[in-house]
Amino acid sequence: IYPWLVVVLAHSLSRTREGLYVRFALLSEIGHSSLSGAIRYRLGRQLGSIVSATDRLVQWHENQPYDKTLNRGLRSVGATLPIIGAQLYIGCPEIPNLRLEKSEPRWHSPDYILVTGSLYLDQSSNIPYKVGPALRYAELFKRRGYMPNPTKVLVLMSYMESSARYTQKLALQTQPAQNLVFKFHPAAPHPSLRRLIPESSQIINGTLYDALENTKLLIGSASGALLEAIVLGISVIVTREPGAAHFSYVPEIGRGLLWVEVSSATEMQGAINQLRESTENRKEEILAARNEMRRQCFGVEPTAETIKAAFDL
Image 1 (cartoon, rainbow, N blue to C red):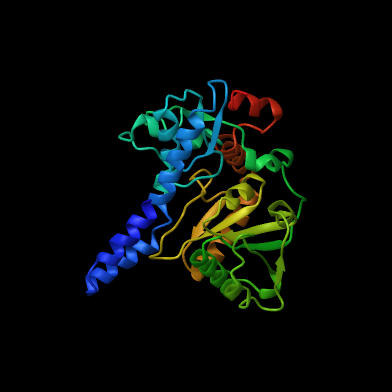
Image 2: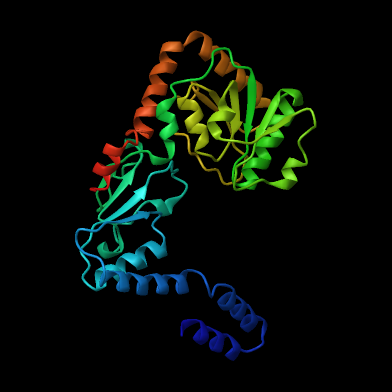
């Protein structure tokens, strides 16, 4: 009856400026965290009467209300099956909800959390963290590098439109249009940005790894794909718009050797020269930094054996 109680409450409010504002807030959010959380809690209680201790619950875990309420529902009826939180993706420190608060009630959380590499382990958490198989990055373990003497400059457009817009702006300001190849995020085509791309540039689709083929330099921001490119031996320029929110998926490993961050067109050419000089004269340092990034960020190849072990199957 929750939705109907909210509707009754909303219509009981006065038609003042404040009353209309609160009414709008109540009705526009009626299907979000409160309602979905309540539904997931009831689902958890129902599942709790069906499952056994030998079952497993695997969550794509982002520490969201719908995770917590489901877990609480299960445990409120005495379910003892292991709950495994899978954070098997590249995270960044600017997304704080990925980290569990110590004050969070224990029965809201998984029994343990799997991450893709040691870099993402949270030693301060009261929930165990473990390195699990890098499920989304299986292709990364099959490839150790790309063809020698690549020629392409790839502009990787972020899912976040503001980051994609600034990346596109810097690329077009600093590189000949005919040298640029653009790849948009598959879930964010950004039609307004597509229209700004000159006819002499190229737009490609397909997989990330196909796009990285023959790429000598990648320009992008706010994407874990930058990290994958670095590990595969591609020099990366990370664009950062001054005064705007920035999501730093690339760790500090290899800064200045493998990747450089720029905030203006004037910094771009210097960054390109720096990466070129490193590639030519600091090959051993580059290889060591790249291997360290691979080790810390993508620790376990996803095979049948490692998947079974990680999820206790």
